[in-house]
Figure 1 (cartoon, rainbow, N blue to C red):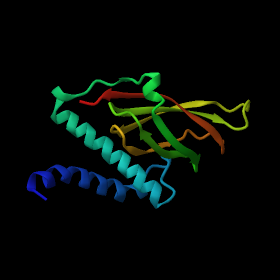
Figure 2: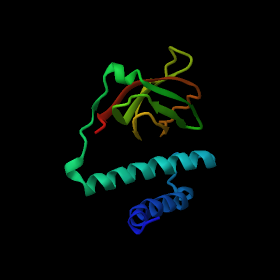
Figure 3: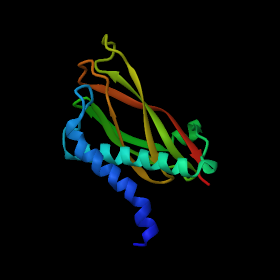
Figure 4: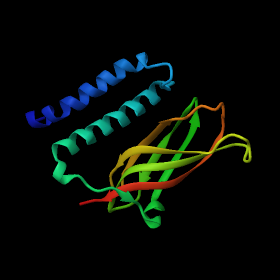
Length: 161
């Protein structure tokens, strides 16, 4: 591996290592991962977001402008997931050949329908390149609801160059 690539990857590796080591010391009001797989997903999402932020800072003239995806582009997203232990997690496939997805919005509705509990929308920051798959994960606001139905209602992204 050449030195330039190693230097570029070092901040990402360092950040991921720090995140994994500090995950056991999270505050009481944060939802901690409940197993190894959840911890890896959370670290990967956080590392990807941090890497994107760093690159956007280094190349501000190349910052793509996010926009709401059209209904047609939204229809090409295939998401699977569910909730448990206060976390919604799953995956999303971006079937668009011309959009990078940067955020999705899911709507969680408590089961049974009509219960007095509140339906909530969650925005999840992601980076899903065209024709690729990525993980989804978000801590849920706890209201002791154990079961939800959910749907993908919106997405944001930018045209691939």
